Image: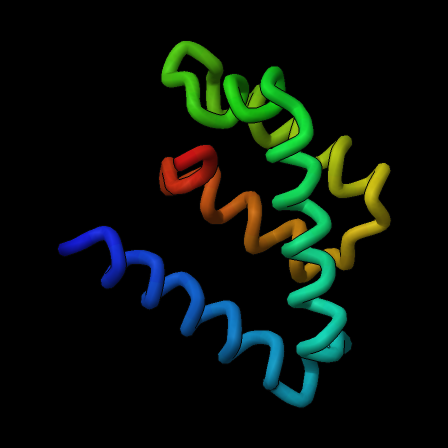
Length: 93
């Protein structure tokens, strides 16, 4: 599967979840929160290294992402999406 196909698959899944009536988050808020998380990654070389490094365990990456998400006030649904990306080794690319 190509890189763009993978991105589209994850993006489509997130959209499906966010637009469902039980999501509890507005699509605009979801996009804003993803942009905020991306800005945190871009502003911290150490954060980028942690997410990209195969030497850092997934458990450690999940812990770091949880702490950053909490500090940024991200909704649970966005946090869960970020954790899925991490679990599937899609974070930090």
